[in-house]
Image (cartoon, rainbow, N blue to C red; front, side, top):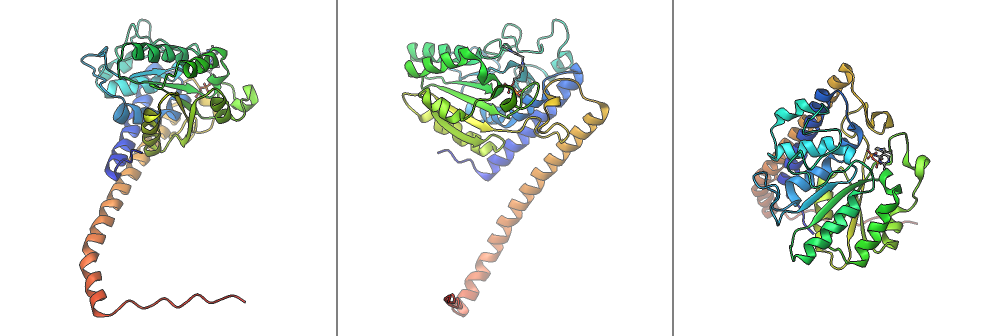
Length: 322
Ligand SMILES: Cc1ncc(C[n+]2csc(CCOP(=O)(O)OP(=O)(O)O)c2C)c(N)n1
């Protein structure tokens, strides 16, 4: 299992903060957007775009051997735009056009307008069927590229998604990894109240998939799970990522009211404060880790000396009860 170093983990955390900053900038420009689901998927996108997706190249967006990514829950496109801009697929100047007529950044992603988008999505339930077709096509072409698709947990109530799940097993589409951004809320409230799907792990297993479950905000867990998934043969893998809708902006966390819409000036300020605090926490974590390394390095010779002088005291035996 791929384990990233402490330094890599900190770097990925910093990227996640940057992606959230971009999301905030885009929603400010458009005065609207599906913010909650974009924020819950941030660490998933960070791991994919900064660590996992191979051969993605802004200079050659249709490169044959590129890994494919589809945001099936197309309304989460704010985070896709953020990742693609950070990767150099387009200039951040385009953020200012978000949600405007003829923009390359519409309210749902359009592959004909924006390089890096693999498929139009927005009508829920279509991303997985498209991804299964892509996976089969790549295998027929003997192309080693992989396909990744993010779905929402609310989206799992779409019927054709389960037809696709059965097809992926039937045709052994093991180059495909599904990720469920399981934030437990959808547009109008809790998923369990609107269309409950109990035991989603069992359901995917019953459809023949290999199932992993992780904390979707721990970027190191996301990277490890994606790496594990890539090595599974004969069956597709789904990663159920437990997340929090609106993660990172205190007023939006776990609040379905921030599924879609605009933010007040007050909320923009609060979000900025949250981002600054997140950046400061990462800096403190980094300083702490560096300090700890220095301390152990400085302590080592002293510890040796004292050990040489007098033997370590034996711990008193634990008192027996009773
Ligand atoms: C076929 C279809 N039905 C309804 C909608 C309207 N809609 C947009 S987002 C959404 C909720 C999706 O919930 P979830 O997949 O959990 O996304 P998240 O909460 O992570 O944003 C709905 C019902 C849609 N886009 N497509």
